[in-house]
Image (tube, rainbow, N blue to C red; front, side, top):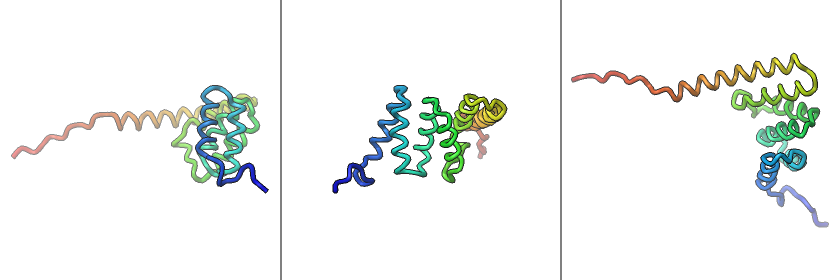
Length: 136
């Protein structure tokens, strides 16, 4: 019997790119279907989980969004400090389901992370003070 799909025959790159394009063009439900299929194959992939969080939020599937955000937070490979938008997205979802106090806490956390990110970026971009050279 011939398999329609197998892990050997599916092009993960195509699924990822196609779902990204759907997200870019506002076709969130279509992106969600592809991303859920991709997530079934790549369960612990943080990039797929991030895209699932975004797609489910934009598709107004807040129950799914909360589940994917929780799954992302529990993924050992995920570092929220490297993706502060996590807190902003979670804040939007919580606000949509009328959990205002938790939404405000997440938003405050996002603002704190963003502020720290900007400070570190300024330190990187600031020209180093020239050290006086030793005169012989």
